[in-house]
Image 1 (cartoon, one colour):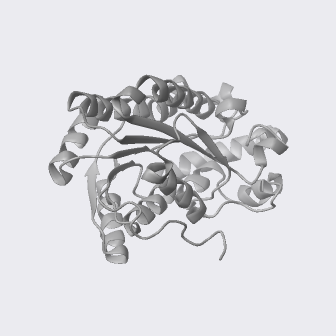
Image 2 (cartoon, one colour):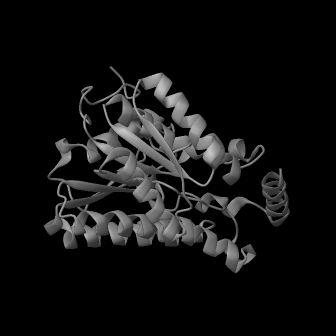
Image 3 (tube, rainbow, N blue to C red):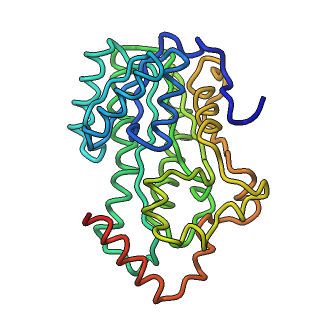
Length: 293
């Protein structure tokens, strides 16, 4: 047995209905797949409906489970409520919300426009708030118990990190919300926990963060005491445990899964201090070209 294998028994999430924001690709997709393998029905959301529908079809074929694709921009509360209602109509009820949708830029902060800064805050912090309120209010109004919210944060949510200041700011807010509502809404039967992953490479996110050959120049595995990055199944295993009934006494916790990276050196992107100004110019041009493609 090794860390890339599945952890929980096959029926661990049987009968659970789960919403995963940002579930169309990357870590959201990996977690969704494992949830389905464990017997859950999962609704995945993002702004890109075509990607969602392709992912849903792929995962249903691979797992034999149910995956419902619903378009939603988490920055817009009305869209979030419409998404919630669509999932409730499809599934009947929702047991678990996984706030996974995220965005990030690597850049010297003085190079960011106010709009670029706001974009990350709106997706990560406002989006998590919107989904949490929409589903939380519903559960409380209907007096539904045994509900779970799991938030994906980062290790630099508590340390901060240079060159990803909007993300660090937003994730710190999500972490504070997690811990606050774990206390306030426990009386309603709602648990809140968070996962703080270290480096778990995904093609989309890491291509945006470190385009071109920058991934080789700034190999984040070298900062990890275990000398490797994370495997998606490792994160999916942890997420599945935290949303399952096996973790019923875990509330208000943030669990780090980073191979010891943050203990070795706070600030996942602080090493970017080594990038000279001309390379920042090249990086900015590459990101703009990618966005325009």
